[in-house]
Image 1 (cartoon, rainbow, N blue to C red):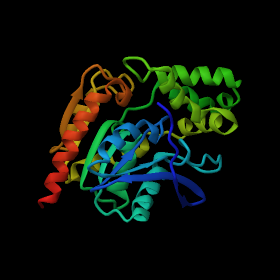
Image 2 (cartoon, rainbow, N blue to C red):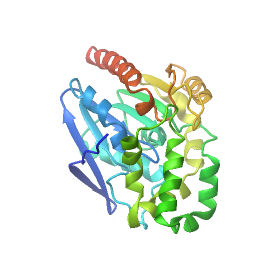
Image 3 (cartoon, rainbow, N blue to C red):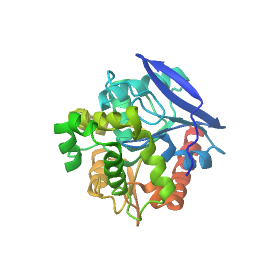
Image 4 (cartoon, helix red, strand yellow):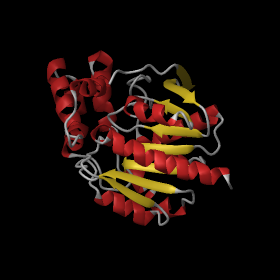
Length: 281
C-alpha cells in the first residue's frame, strides 16, 4: 500500500489538520484510530466514493497532520477537533465510519459537542472500559525514556507492536506505511506522547450516554481482535439497544488489512442501506 497525500488543510488552535474529499453523493466521513492514519481507510474510501462524497482526515498528532509537542492529542481534544472540522466542512448529518479510538472521537463529538450523524458505523472501536494494553501502561509511566530510544530500537518496537494488531500478518509495504509516520525526530516522540495521553476517563464520561443515540448504528468487529476483544462488540451493542452487530471471521484489529474484501462488502451493504433509508425520509 503506497501512501497518498492529503491535499487540504484545516487550522484549529494552532494545529494543522490535513484532510481530503473526493467522490460524489451523500457525505461519508472516516475516522482512523491509534497508531494509524487515514491511509488505513483509503482503499475502502475510494471504493465507496462512487456512491458517496468521502472525507478522510488525519487527527492532530497522527499521519500528516501537525505533531507539535506543546499540543495535546488526547481523546478530549480530538472530539473537539472533529466537531469543528464537521462545521468547517458544512456537514450537518454525514454518515460516519470509525475505527479504534476514532470511535470514541466520533461518539464524543456526537454526545458532548453537538455533532449529528445520519448513521454511525463503529469498527473495532475504543468505546468501553477497560482498554489499553500492558505496553500502553508501560509507556505512560516512562514516556520520556521511550522517546530517547535509539531510532533502530524504536522502529523495531513499533513494528512489533503494530504487527500484533493483525491476525493474518502484515505485508512489508503495509507495515512500512503504518510505521513510517512514527519515525524520525518528529514521529518518534509523537508516538509515545499519544500513548502517554490515552486515558479511560474520556470513554467513561460518555458510556452512560450511549443509550441516547437515535440514528442507525452498526458495529463491525474482527472476530480475532486481540487488542479490543470481541466481547466489546456485544457490550457496545447492548449499550446502544437498536445497534446491529456483524463479526468478520479471520480478522484481527487491523480488519482493513486482514479482511479487506469482507469488510468492504459489509460496509457497502451497510452504507447503501442507510443512504437509501435517509433518501426516503
